[in-house]
Amino acid sequence: MVDLPIETIFEILTRVPAKVVGRSRSVCKEWYALLSTRDFIRVHCSRSLVSSNQRVLLINDLTCSVHPIIFQSYDYGPRSIVTLPFDHQNNDVSILSHLNGLLCVCLNHTNELLLWNPTTTAFKRLSTPDSLGIYINNLDAVGLYADDADDYKVLHIKRRCGVYESYVYYRELNFWRNIPFLTRQEYLSPNFYWSPGTFCGGTLYFTLCECWVGGTNVVICFDINSEQFKEISFPPVPSTGFVQGVLVNVKNELHMFATTGWFEITIDLWTLKEDYWIKVLSCPPIPPISLSLWGDITHYVTNGNWFVMTKLGKLFTIEMDTKPFEILYPVTWFCGYKGAVFVETVVSPSI
Image (cartoon, rainbow, N blue to C red; front, side, top):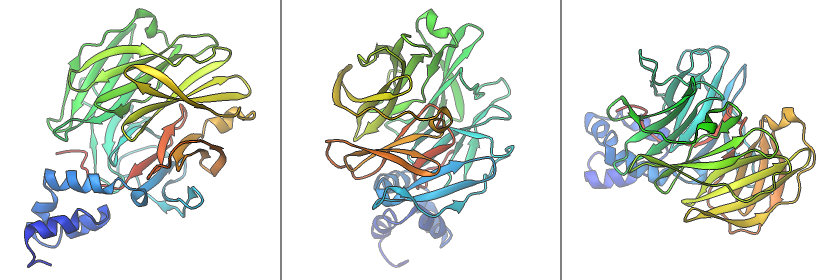
């Protein structure tokens, strides 16, 4: 293969699994240089976004494991134990955001933010001596996104001492920059819960929900090009119980599972069209589920069905009258920080 034209080698190796790319870098200096270029990583990543490259990462107090997804039964396959490559205490790590094989995680014993690729094991600490890149659970929000130049960035919204601040981390520059953040004063209350950011169509979206019956619920949008925020309305769901909006990007269209209820939970699926929400369908009420079980739930959308999963596997299925999807879309619940669906890529957390 070393005698093949470089263009042919490029085409072949952008179609192989990420771990094969990692081994191929040691073949020779020319291959190492080729497989480390931005063009190669970009094309390989785009071709890796298929179901066979998807994995589920699960973290508990004793182990960190990666599972393939069995698409015939939509269950988890046999696990592979992963050793966390950074300092931690009893796997006390929260997964805050994920995009194209990169995870943004928080080390809970130090509150430091990291970018981590679990496939290559490479990671990058984002914290600085002046306390940038320090995440406080239940107060802050984080979103991971990529710009048109394939630079991966982290938006960090901080709520401190009655003031909101927002910063963007630039992977290419290894630098945090403060950007203006304008929102209503009442959102500073700790009764408001921020979701992780969901990247879709050049915008990061967050739900902001007040944690009591009849509370205020909104969606905060961050335009990655203008680096400006705006607020749009929440879908018109009943306020007869606790309300939570869970966002997912499906084929570059933003969807929300809006849940409301007390003991039995009602869930509606909405899609965003030009800042307005359109109801796609209503799911049958979910039977009562213990609060401890809700803490492990993550929702997955695939093949026209919606699966409610826990660390133990599939809990139940809700059939949806939608077209099948090629891959599995994770819709992370508010307590689902101990797991993530990611794609195996060679995207680096640092330049």
